[in-house]
Image (cartoon, rainbow, N blue to C red):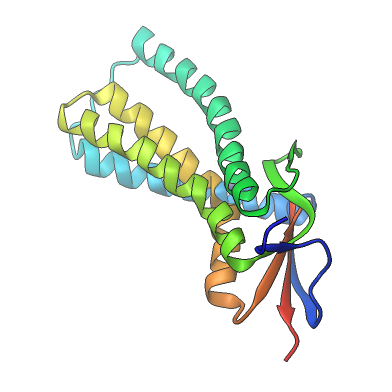
Length: 198
Ligand SMILES: [Zn+2]
């Protein structure tokens, strides 16, 4: 335990909100928004990178790239959750919980109330790290005219961007919706938010 977290909810705090990806409605909404966000991002990037001359040959090269994409996405999912985990570990020194629901992979620190700073760092770490990891090669391949590799990184970045919807939604809540001191209990699939009583 560190000064950034408590085993018991600090006195004077009450639960104000929860986001539970194990609830069907939340899971469906999250996935629909993730898909829409992915498609919009991919469309924007394809327009920027390829302008009017998108000429990818449908053949073995494209098939190989798509297979690499599938493997990369599985690896990405694991690394994304590990990145949440690294930040949670540094900030809390507590035991982590990793898991998979029918609709998403997750990482959390169960039965622990973490402060706003810890929650924000853990939430935003994968978004920040993997945006750089995918955008830098995209820029390199786009400027050198490698269309196939550009497409690969456009798809990786767009799926990553859409897939971060849950993290970005929680971040929005913490930064703009809930004012003052907040503690978050994150068991991975479910985040509960606690605010100090007025
Ligand atoms: Zn995440």
